[in-house]
Every structure is written in structure tokens, then in C-alpha cells.
Length: 263
Image (cartoon, rainbow, N blue to C red; front, side):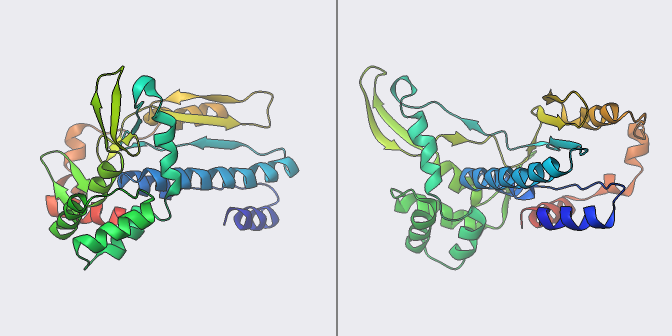
């Protein structure tokens, strides 16, 4: 899609154009606590950047800005095992995945716990899923799309599947540790957008480039400054905001929005 868009726009707009490309499936995967899905979609984005860089070689007067609009689910890659010796092995286990949680969830609908276990083993690449864990997935799947707490929304059974695949059990001390169970090592704080700083990279036809980490609300200012654009976003008070219709959505409105977002 990127190659076609660049070809069409460059032919029809010889004076220049702006193209925004979103690797939106990374967002979907992390909402679902699906580390393998997220990694494969980051890889897809990297392949897309290769297409863009080939275009820039032929069109050097091109500005490339790479960034993210927000964090998602604040995942962490954990060191595991004696002296963290299992950490790399654990992370590499995610490469055996054959499908996303979203795809697995579709296959699981209407299935019993044993069938769900077979689906999870086949498509996740983790062959030691227990029947009890499959029963937990089955229960979450049949409770509804999401579980609601006071301040949080959890995608289910995706979040449960993510926790199951990251599970490890050890016995003994640090010096004599016995591995009972060794799966992946990526844990998530939740299934919502998060507030960690975002990476930005600006590759410019000028004599200098920029890169760094920044609060996502400052990204627009960095890009405007780089382009020499003086502009301020409109602002409003809290009272003005609360007078808007969007500030009066109900919990059911919010639930429907989130259900549609992950779907």
C-alpha cells in the first residue's frame, strides 16, 4: 500500500505531497497484550520503512518523520532465570506464534476448554498450556468482550492469554534454581493507552537530523519547529470542555467505543 501510495502521489503531485502512514495493527496487538502480534507488526513497519527509504534515495528532497502518537499497555521485557540466563530464550519463544490473539479468539468462539487449549497451543507456539488455563480463557471468552473495573478496561480473553503465555515458575534459591515452567517474559500493565515517552526520528534533506524521546503531547511542537511553522493548538478551559457533548458520554458509550476499537 505504501509503495502504491508513493507512486501515485509523486506522479500526480510533482510539486510535492504529504503522506501519513500508520502501522495501526501494532496498537491493536498491544491492546490485546499480544506480544508476538506486536513484534510481527513492528517488523512489518520496518519493512515499510525500507520501501520509504528506497523512495528517498530516488527523491532526496523528502522529509521523513517517524513517531508514535502514544504508548500502549506499557509492556516490559523481564529478565528471568538464574543471572537472567533464560531471558533471551524466553523472549525468542514468541517467534513461534502462527497467528494473532484476534484470530485465535475468532476460532475459540463456541468451543469447549479442550478445543480452546488445542487452538492456543497450535497458534501460540507454547505447547505446555494446561487445561485449567484453557478453562480460564473459556470463562473470560464467555463473560463478554471486556471486563470493567473502576478505572480500567481489560480486553478479554486476550489479557488472560497474554498472562498465560508470560508465565514462569521456579523453585529453589538463586544459586540452585529449578525451572518448573519456562514460557515468555513479556508482561503488560493493562490493555489501555499509556503515558511513556515516545521516540521520534526526523530524517531530513537538510544538513541535520533529529531524534530523541519526548512526551507525546509535545510531538506536534517538535515537528512544527523543525518545519519552521509557528502555530498554537486551540485551547479551552475545563468548564468549556465539560460543556461539550463529548464530555457527557455514558459508560455504555465508552464500552461500545472500546469494543469497536479492538475489533
